[in-house]
Every structure is written in C-alpha cells, then in structure tokens.
Image (cartoon, rainbow, N blue to C red; front, side, top):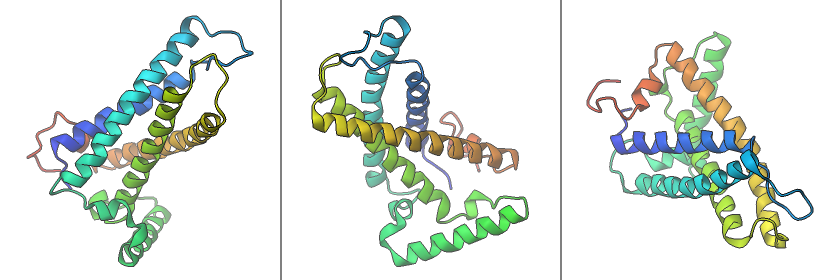
Length: 201
C-alpha cells in the first residue's frame, strides 16, 4: 500500500505529538488545590502538555477529515470493521494467519494483511481522538490550581485511563513496525514523508 504525502505527514505529526505528550507527562505535575504549586521544570512541562495537547487535537481531527476526503489508500471501512460481518470475518482470518506465522517465528508481509493492520490503525485513531478531546475539555473547563468541577474530574479520570492505553498502543505499534523493518518489510521507510511517493514500497 502506497500512502500519500498528506497521510505520511499527518502520521508523522501525530506520532511526534504523542511521543512528546508521553515523555512530557513523566516530568509535569498537575497544579491542584492542597498541593505545593508546581515550579520550574514541573510547571513548564505542564504548560507544554496543555499546548501540545491542543495541537494534538487539531492534528487528529485533520487526520479524520483526511480519511473522509481522500479517494485512494485504505478504505475507511477497513479501519473500523466492527459493523460489517464480512470485514469481521476477514479480520478473524487475518489474525489466524498472524498466529500461524508467529508460531513459525515470522511475520506476514503487511501488504498481505488486509484486515488486522488497518484495524490497528483505526483503533489508534479512535484512542488518540478521545485522548486529545478529553484533555482539551479539561483545558477549557478548569483553571489549574482551583477546585475541579465534578464532570471535569470524571473526564480527566477517563483521560488518565486512556493514557495507559496510549502507552500500550505506542509500545506495540512501534515495536511491530521496527520488527517488520528488520524483516525487510520497510514500513518505516514507506511512512517517511520525505520519500518519493512514486517509489515502489
């Protein structure tokens, strides 16, 4: 599957934003009442987290719009197969093929993964949209250092839970991409925005 420059650029921007947020979350401290006011690196990291979070929402919304507007590449139905009996059957068969390959200590070529790879991409887009949306809601409805409204507190609980999913998703997604690259499938090079989009695989 050849990806357009727009898809590859949006993928790179979203990946960079996610990695920045995950790293930044380890340095920041949320300013809550009854706690010492964050200062220095902790305060700066929290500010960066807020603004990169807003940028992340813009990027992921653009990605979703691009999925709806583009005329080629992966069919959106393959990204979200949950409402099609035929696509779910393809997904089941693709998972079974991956399990057979893993037992043989190999991975199938992603070009011949018609269901599992797109589903994982779609799942990532859903998680990232929810993550960015809940963070943005908190940014708009809460002033740091003041008491948090009950609904905002609930939304931030969802945000924190999703953060664990994002960590797991990134570890598995990046690990699989690197493994495919080592096996000669060239996924990382295909997704680089600077490569020639007319070049083969």
